[in-house]
Amino acid sequence: MSGKPAVERTALRSERVHASEPERIALRIERVHASELERLALCLEIRREVFVRGQGVCEAEEIDGLDAACRHYLAWSGTEPVGTARLRSTPAGAKAERVAVRAPWRGVGVGAALMRELEEDARRAGRAQVVLNAQLAALAFYERLGYVAEGDVFDEAGIPHRRMRRALAGPKAPGARLRS
Image 1 (tube, helix red, strand yellow):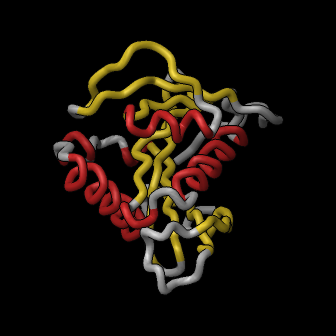
Image 2 (cartoon, rainbow, N blue to C red; image 1 turned 60 degrees about the horizontal axis):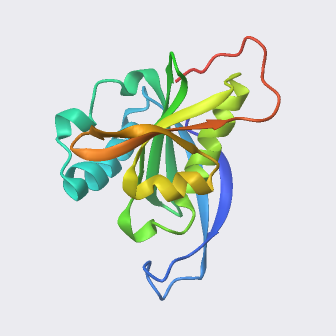
Image 3 (cartoon, one colour; image 1 turned 180 degrees about the vertical axis):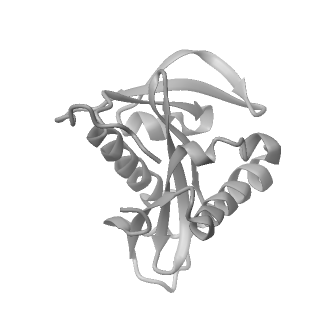
């Protein structure tokens, strides 16, 4: 159901976000198909803000040409896009990638809400696990979500990473496929 809200979540608001606003925020996670160019552009802009401008990742490496084959997720707080992620089908399984939350919205549950929705879609598609490459600075975040680090530290886009994996519990849809 592309372009429609996937789930509504509520998370505590961090003091880093405008102190004059309410203490709680309502998050809406929207699934975005790569053909929805306006929505996809919002996802890409958040990734540019977080990874290219924020972390110095080369834009050609960040916008890697794989977006058309992915399912995208866009987190909203009211009318403001605040985070994004994508889910890609790989031989290793469902792979969470490009999880990015705008700086003022970090630490209030946006990333966790994006990951829950992504994991639920992977589960519904019959995937037994989700894998990802986590920046070392985000390792504890993913561990709190149940991911387990494996292997050695490696460089990706000039940033140290570790491979992580999480088994997905629950019923699988027989013959279901992960589609963008």
